[in-house]
Length: 315
Image (cartoon, rainbow, N blue to C red; front, side):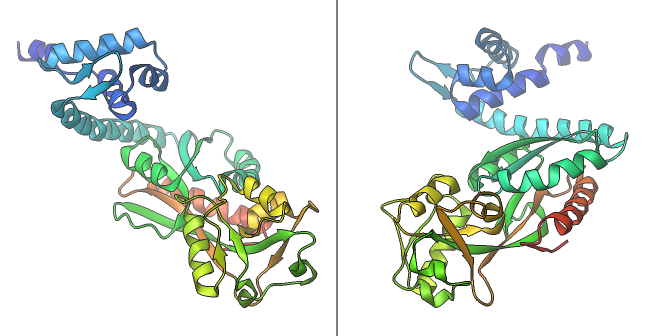
């Protein structure tokens, strides 16, 4: 009898996933798309969940969706429960061997397109069963996704403020001064930081860690950080630099990939100790795959030592 009651009233894992998707999107159609089901299916499962619990979790109207206080509380418990379910699945996968399954990876937009092409071919050769499901995003969104369990691990600028994560440094990446090909600095082989005084510096829009770093460099050396024109990507910044709207500071791997072989802009290293950013891996504390991430980090460091002399490998 107790088992029958348990089965009747206990939510299914899929119903918890649907509730969490509605809570995060505040929209039934987008939640259904995120879960790869039809909207009627998702809506019916939410109604069945509410019937099991005898409570309204989601208030529906034609214009918007409101999660009730109880719905918010249950969604938070669902988030933790689903994370534990994923950990159980991970333990079973690890029993078959390391780096033989899919890792959901988040990567900041100023890094992914320039790091992954360097490491993926060699990783695929050494670990043919390994799959990297990659999502690019802003730092805040990636950290939230990692904490919620929708991502397993991040390639991310360090340090991070959040105490619930583990980190491993991979490499230190210098910044270069990028300028139009006809700028007076283009005649220099390197740029002293003091030469940036009174220069206009173009940066990414706020929300990027690179924006925060460039902002500090401008304040330190008396450069003018442009607030009227901000880039949504490094590529848009490069185009604005080419039009003579200012200089920019760009990471070495981007320069290697997109600047070194062009003539509309040129890149020059800093003289002496260059400003740099540290890139590492980030994952949740006590994650079941922690030893797997550590092995992956060692493999990545070995690959970068062979393929990217522009950076300082730290692992």
